[in-house]
Image 1 (cartoon, rainbow, N blue to C red):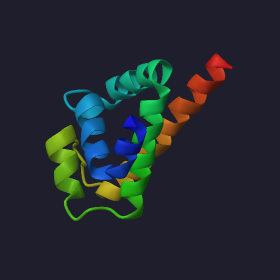
Image 2 (cartoon, rainbow, N blue to C red; image 1 turned 90 degrees about the vertical axis):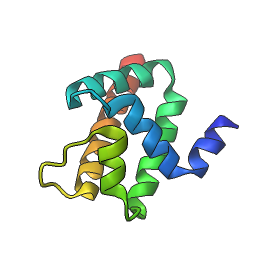
Image 3 (cartoon, rainbow, N blue to C red; image 1 turned 60 degrees about the horizontal axis):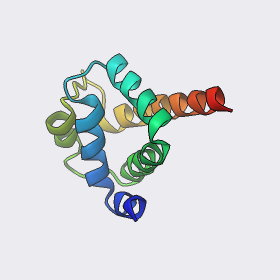
Image 4 (cartoon, rainbow, N blue to C red; image 1 turned 45 degrees about the horizontal axis):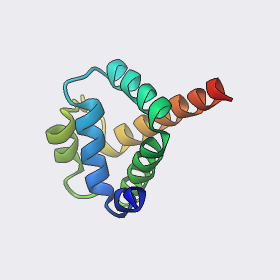
Amino acid sequence: AKSARNRADPVAMLRAFLQRFWQDNTPEEALALWRRQVASGRWWAEDALYGLREILKAPPDDLTDLLRDDGWVLLDGHEPVDWLRSTIDRLQAVMDSVGQDQA
């Protein structure tokens, strides 16, 4: 039931992800937190990636504001969609490596 709720609202999932992992952390710290999340609660990480991918398919007009306000993300001239795409790739790589560690 939690997973269905998470997946039903990609913007809420993005906001939760940003607040939980990105806000007040460096990218390296965020990825370390993500690795711990994948190891301890993979279902939530899978829901988060699903939501982020849904956002990427149809980015909201306020994506830049969401990244800035909920994640304190500094885009440094990058397009928000590019930042999200590269972040998803890095998150997936961590998820894949944790899966291999546990196999």
